[in-house]
Length: 531
Image (cartoon, rainbow, N blue to C red; front, side, top):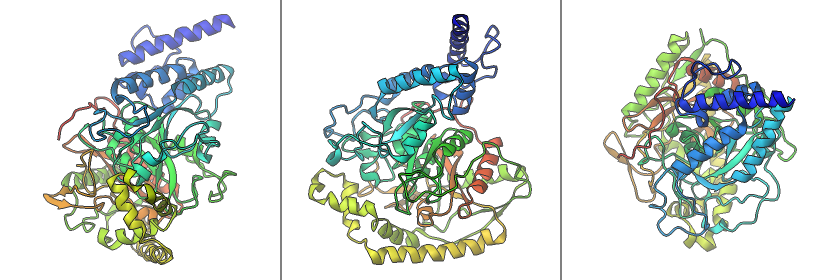
């Protein structure tokens, strides 16, 4: 027994040395991983790779956790450990700033226990894999602040959320909580409590929101997987801007709140990692009424796309200003990747517009618990961010009539989509995630206008994600398909028919096979800071 452990340790240390050097060379033991890995080493290993190496005894979860902690210490910048309002939140930190709270001691203990499970042959699906937790998902003994000064001293959580139960039951290691905009109400991530979260691909630019800290943590190599939530694009926007795969599951697929606009889901650097995590968090749970049964299983591999009919809409009618040329080019190139695999990609033009949909969606959203939460915070609105105060004013427009209007619009959009896309034999719809990749990290929607094709655009019209929260039974995979001239990635939404998750996964997997592959070779964030 002692000899075997020593041999395992030798193999593990040999593999670490090779990984940190960026390649495997002659002399590495046969039992160590035998394929090249990314130049960034341990911190960027995929979950699938890690699990394989852990089973071989070539690596330990402790090794990967240590490597990711080192990157956090190098690139994240200081945390606001005081928990008090920052004197100048827009200038605080200046680095990635994706971590709200760290739980390294707890995580190191869990990683050591996972190492023992691999030795004993009792490892679970996500054993030893690090998962960053959005500052929304309740973990017993942790605090959820929602990025708000009002909740900076909120009581410690007494019970895990369902998604946390599911992750822990599969062996995940939870080591950090990630930053969010206040009350999850902005499409970018900054607050008076945590400051500005910046994009590792280019620190001048934003990571998106509201799961922005999760997206940034993945891009920076701080974690292997991350949780996200999505009420208007909060998984897909960070996925697009950070070059990740993200999944907005149809309502009920992942146990979450009773609000039909919302879902929880995975963020990951690769398609297979996303599918692996989705398998862990999908299915019914005794704590949540709105959870579909039976559990749907998501394969990591999918059959050919030969002969599969797919619709493509550039959504150029969405805004009067159109969409950025780099976004259109990335979608066109993605369609060609799928065509080369035998898919039949046909252009459609639904003609939907932001002006038509957004006011109805927003008033419907603010008729749910998110609106009630904002109204409850009204007595302390002097502590709120500018964008949260603006949302508070809008929350007064919510109510039964607003929800009825949202339901009516959703029914009409659903019928139109069925007639023009899925009723014509298409298995998926391809469309942009965002109209532009040019979001300054400190963007304030109450006063700052973005520019698209040389024209200023105020408000959130640049996002094309919230449609699928209104139409909440449609699954959407966000897929990285390009890198803009400002070095910020761009994503494509792959929309499946209602509850047909596996059709969307099949198309996303097809693209992942031969399309753009970030976090590989030389395609890593370089932490530049250029407008």
